[in-house]
Length: 137
Image 1 (cartoon, rainbow, N blue to C red):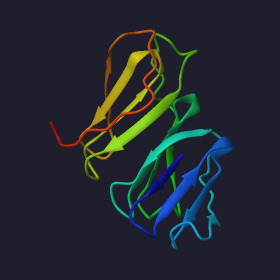
Image 2: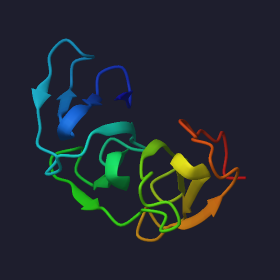
Image 3: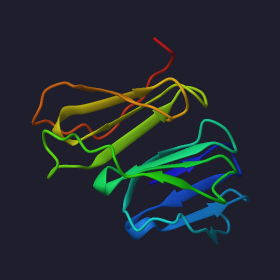
Image 4: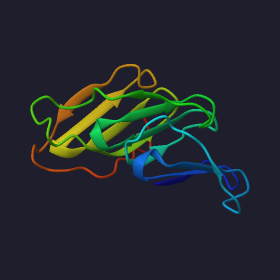
């Protein structure tokens, strides 16, 4: 997963919690620790400081300092299908309002920066890989 906040500031994440940051448009990268061994499938940074990672094992990572430190939630598994617990997409309209999607038709929404999430299921058995909303509606 790759995300650039602007022409210079960007991040890249992948297998086993691997995470790097660039401040020169991808010319060079600095390794950063996420504190998780979960593979990251997607990320979104609604600001230069606040960002979210989602991935395997229903892992959700949050940073409030541009990726220097991370806090993790590992409790997003849909208990009706715990064997299929992957999150694949995340998008935030601003630092508070965001969505994430995953396997088993799961769609999550937060209005408080990921402190709590509302879950809905649409088309159980389907996997959603990406999410993006142009506005708050």
